[in-house]
Every structure is written in structure tokens, then in C-alpha cells.
Length: 407
Image 1 (cartoon, rainbow, N blue to C red):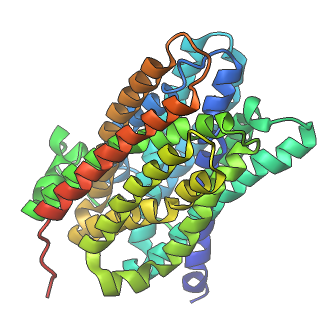
Image 2 (image 1 turned 120 degrees about the vertical axis):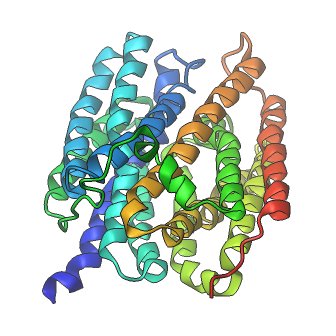
């Protein structure tokens, strides 16, 4: 009984550290690279990250679901990843080595997104009520990471911490801590042990087929498409904030995660009253509005528009991505849960973000040319493009998704 009472807090600590790690480096790496003279290469961390997400199902389908318990794989990957992060700043004079080590790190980290979700779903009894409570601590972890980088480390060094290697070091320490902690989590044995191994099952294609319905296929397609404009937000918001006069860049971006906490806690309320389709549509509409605010706020650096666009992150992320994770889990069976979550990671954080990062990078560099930074007018033009694409995806989903409620 004691273990049962402590289960949600234990999983919440796992989720806190899981996203503290990501938030510590992901929202500042482009600033650090620009400081190192790699301002035209800042899209590459956001390219190697989705490449790793494409590989992630192989860890989930082959290792976690078949041979080793989830908590052991989770712990091992985080410890290895932490060690790699410590090495990244030491090769900052070589862009190829710098990006290469980030690729190796992400190959360790990205499978852990699906592993932590799978471990949590396996050990709870009510996904709609318990998972948002657990997952919200991941958002809190991201917030604390951003505030610690901008205000904590910034105060200590009396400079902009995002321009230094300290965010990478912070993520490395947290990664090793989570790796060690993971071995204390509830034993989660492989559910597909003894099953025949095939590339289809490892990549999650069997799970995709098993879950197949017209509405599910539409959901997967739109999840993939919405991640293309999403890549522009993660990569270029931090640079946009710097160009607009913001100093505490990582800290400012945590406003988005603060709103995410609020909407995460409200998700059970919205699930009952809105259902999956409306929640997903609201999430996509928020992406359109966010980019529109960024575009309109760019020419004159209108603070409330920029802050408003960031604050919409709670609706953007929770109503689409967390709702999507729960939707996939509810459609899954226990046997393919890990594969299904891994396939969702592959489609969204993998293929979608990979294509999006390259498109965003090419778009940004086309505006940049021989300049060191975009002008306010160029930022206005830049942000309208992902806004239009997100609007197209929203309309596509509205017309094609016809999910019928289960009896």
C-alpha cells in the first residue's frame, strides 16, 4: 500500500528530471552556437534531435519491449547521455565534432521520451486522470531549468548564461542523476518477450497497422505535418527574443511552460467536455495564433505580442501533443503500448521535426544572406510562413478527422 501511495510522486520525479534535462540545453543551444560563430548552423541541433527520434523506436521496440526492463534501459541511456554532454563544449572549435556529439547525445536521450511515457502508463490505472498529473512535473522541470539557466547561473557569472557552455553542463549533471534514479523505479518488464522479431514491429509499423482506422491515420498525418512548423519555434524563438531585446532568453521562454502547467492540470476537465477532436483542433489553432502574434509583433518588437505567443505554448503543446499521447495509449493494447508510443515519437519528434528543422534552417538562411541577423521586417515575413502552414494542417484535420466515440 505504501508503494502504491508513493507511485505517482516517484513517477513525477522521473518526469521532472526527464524534461529538466531537455529544457536546460534545448532552449539555449542556438544562442551558444551563435556566440561561437556558428550562427548559420543553429538548425543542426534541431536536425540531429529528430534523427535520433527516428532511431528511438528501435530502442523501444527491440530492447525495452523485448529483452530488458524499461527502468534499466532508461537509466543506462541517461547516464551515457550525461557523459556525452560533458564532452560537447570541449569540441566547440570544430562545428562537425560539436554537432556530431550532439547527435550521439540525442541518440541516447530521444528513446527515453517514449520509455518514460511507457513506464508511467504501465504503472498507472487511470491514464486520463493520473498521467496529466505526472506529466505536469515534466513541464515544471522545463520551467525550473530555464529559470535556473537565466537567473541562477546568470546571477553567478554576472553574464548571459545562454551564451556559455553552462546549460550543457547542467543538463549533463541532471542526466546522470536521472540515470541513477531510474534504477529505483517500479520494475517494468518487457511485454513482447519471446515474440518474433521483425523490422516492422521494431519500427512500430505493426502497432500502426493494429491501431489502423481512417481517423487514426488522419491523426498520424496531421501530427507529422504540424511538427514541420513546430521546428521553427524551438529553433528560432530564442534568436528572435535576442533580436527583440530580451536578455533572459531561457527564462522568458519558461512562460510557455508555466501556461502548460495550468492547462495540463485542466486536461481532465477538457477531456470530458470537449473530446479528442476539439482538443486537437484547439491545439492547432493555437499554433496559428502564436506565429501570427510573433509576426505582428516583430516590426516594432511589441512585447505583449511576443510574450503572448510564448504563453500560448500551454494550449499548443498540451492540447495537441499530450492529448495525442493519451489518444494513442487508449487505442493501444498493453502488448504494443511501447511500440505505439515509439511510433508516435518517430512521426512527430522524428520525421516531422527533421523535415521542419531543415526547412526552417533553409528559410532562415535565405533571409539571413550575408547578414549577422534578421531585420524586424524579415522576422515579420519569416513567422507568417509557419503560421500559414499550421492553418493548412488545422483545416485538413477539421475536414478529415471523424473519430466516433467508443461505447
